[in-house]
Amino acid sequence: MRQQMVLGDFIFGLSRGFAYSTLSRGSDGGWSDLAIIASKPQSRQSGQKLEKLTFTGAAMYGIGMQRLDELRALQNKRAPLPLVDGIGRNWGLWRINSVQENQSNVIDDGTAMVMTWILELEEFVNA
Image (spheres, rainbow, N blue to C red):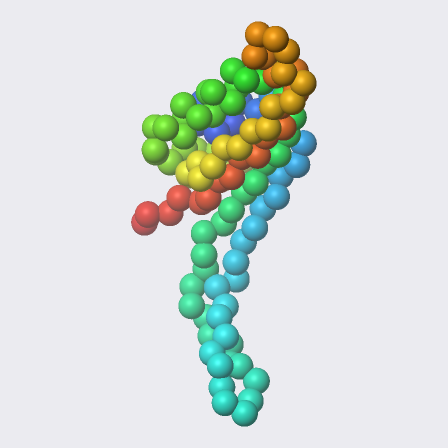
């Protein structure tokens, strides 16, 4: 089965009806500026901040609602999770900072026909 990414035991991909369409990755160089009177600031290395990943996507019907519930169940475990991409590269441990969804075209039984979602992860490094 092809997959885009696996977070813990949660699989992102078209084969599960839950693929992401964008992935944003932010990293920090660890620089800060020290203000100097009558001069430009001096740069100081203060250590890197944790990397952040933001996934966005759209899912359809009840299967999308179920997948979002699965992500929230992982979030509720409050534990770091391994992240591995579709080519087998291990990205290390990540924590789920937030899961957001927007349901639209909701039918009379409460099923959303379309859900857009955002998943925010942050690198977990406690070494």
